[in-house]
Amino acid sequence: MNLPTELPQIGIASKKQSTFSFLLCGTHEGNTDTIILVHSDKRKGKTFLISIPRDLFYKGRRVNVIFAKYGAEAFLNEISWITGLPIDKYILIDMYAFIDVINILGGIEIELEEDLIDPTYRVKEDGRWSTMYYPKGIHRLKGLEALRIARSRHTSSDLDRAERQQKILTAVKKRIEELGLANIGKLYKLIQTLLKYVDTNFTPFELVQFYNEFNNTRVDISNVLSTENVLYQTYSNLYLLNEEQQATMDDSFDKGAWILLPKNQDWNLIRWYIREIIN
Image (cartoon, rainbow, N blue to C red; front, side, top):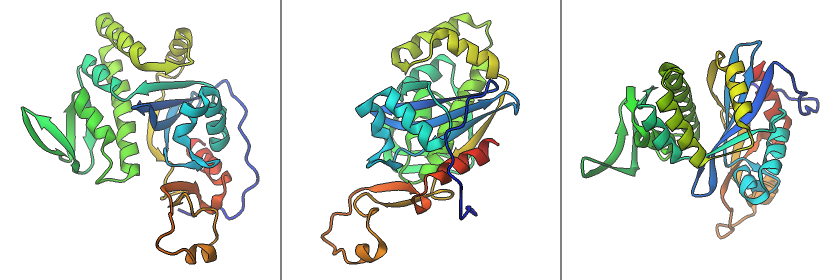
């Protein structure tokens, strides 16, 4: 995509009554595995889901370790600075909660735009082990199947993975709407399950208020910070070196791990790109 060559300093936007932003994060074995910025706008009638890659390298560390190491307040402050949006609420949910939640809902329906094959992801069906494979098309998924599709990453890009996760979240919202408030039993079980797994600074009243205000907005998905727009990929032990210094490194040099940074190391680009999405 065409990026601006010069940008003024973009700060954190002021809060508006018509908009609300929070972070929805998935955890696996204590690590923040998925980070999704949720931004709802009543005037536009849209809720934007924007995936932030866990390998984004900020202040000498991946962003996904900030929550576990420094706590929720620091995590929200840093993501607010990175994105340029005021964020003070979060929902942190264990990835395995999706199994129970989706089963309680009776399954969800999503459409895969291409075959999903992952030979590194072994699955057991009817007592037999096989390679994970879901053909292109519409699928009715139980909880475990939805988790597999959300987590598979070895034969598809992080961009594809993020888009599948957003599709699953949208399908969950749609399924809750299909059940309707008359299904008190299922909704009560859903709340019980969520309370086992969710860490949040929302109060129950705030969640109800958010649902009432923004439930009718259309969900805008497939927004992902990636190397296809404002990020580039490098090694954690190389990014501070210029090209000439990098060229002098021999094969024994420990390059570190793969990380993602904003192009030209300009954090304004991320804030600019997010405003392009939501505006």
